[in-house]
Picture (cartoon, rainbow, N blue to C red):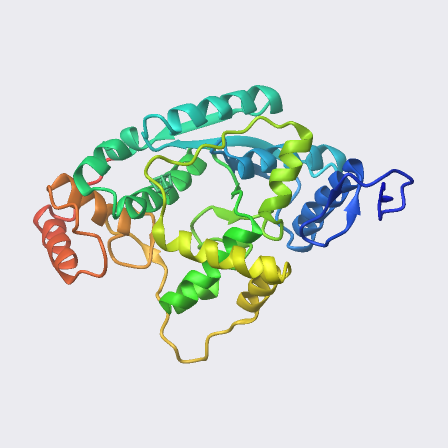
Length: 337
Ligand code: SF4
């Protein structure tokens, strides 16, 4: 028995929205999905007219949908944005080389300039080579730290005002859970922020912050968007995997769990007087860091010295070694980007 679209457009529903439970036809789902992203952008004042915006593009569903929807909203509501695609090639054979083909297709389909930066050109190491050194236990630590900095470097090269990432509501709820479980107050405080930026770093924002992953998949499917869906051959990041499974179980019992966790994270505040890490600039590469020498430089130094565990965890040994190296070299920059 056909169910009428609950937006009262007169058509029959073809899907049930995971976020609200509404029975909608395809067109009303597209409209609701796009309006929510638009409202997120407007309410959080993410952009200003004339901004140059880089979309961090991996070829996966989130960044592909983000690129498609931003282009559409930019035209529909005349945001006046100049949009670019920015990709990072981690050097993972059989994964990133294939997904970059999708990004190159997105470049053509969405008519956006594309910049690709590789770990090899930035750091002299591919993830394949890093995994050969460190094994598969801490590989995502290297990859995540290097990617964050690579995006900043790419954004600086493109001269953009802002980098948008495809983090969705599920990603953010998982991160809140992970930070609660780890007791990481500093990250817990900032992981729900829709905009993150230091005084001297390029703004980062997450227009899909309130968008459910299931709806992103539905949107991409019904719009027939081309995206790459294979998981990284070096995944999974075990800890996030457990948080994800826990969240999926919660969602089955209570679909609003994802939004509830995000809202809980947003309302958490840290008591006055609690010491939080300061943001400063790395004395080696100049990029934003909470330490004198940033994590990327510590990890890179470890790789180059044949001590790949140097930057893993909290190690005073790493601090001492790097301080000595910096002094020895007369504070000369040792990381050549
Ligand atoms: Fe990098 Fe780990 Fe993600 Fe693979 S799963 S792309 S190694 S962070």
